[in-house]
Image 1 (tube, rainbow, N blue to C red):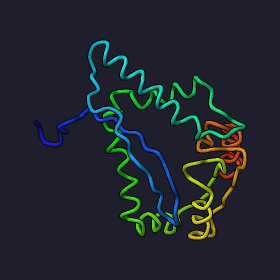
Image 2: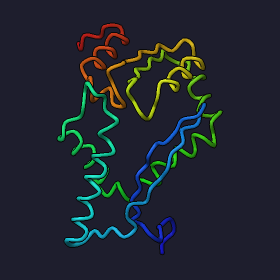
Image 3: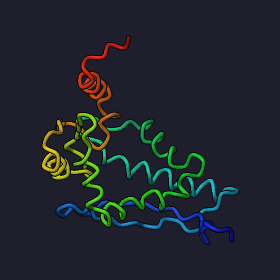
Image 4: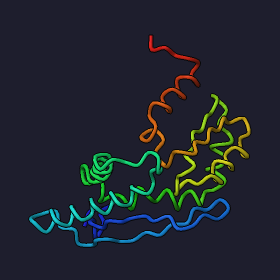
Length: 178
């Protein structure tokens, strides 16, 4: 085995967010497949099952008012598997542990950001990044402009792209594209 190579490179994980306490976001990682073949019919079928699983994981992160289309869910799930991205999902999600282990550093990055104004657009129907989180950001950095959107979930730029685009342009001082 080469340096940095996993003994089991085909581990596929799903993260389910289960509880929020104070500043810690608790989650559980479920291993779905340790033997995901990339060859033949079995690999094709396994990948199809996992794509369907990811679609269903994304669905409840959208608001009721702006539910994702099947096409959007398919595209989001497919992006995970592009160029075998599913094989590194566990490493990509490691930031969740790092955020808890280095809490003061993460908060410091937010509170210490002074080089430009900061605006936060927060979907209140987000089941992952819930409202107490944005309230805490505002408490840490009171000069932050916080815009809470009651009809939006985890994906403001997908759910209400025109509203987010306008908000960004307004924040930049009415840039007219010239």
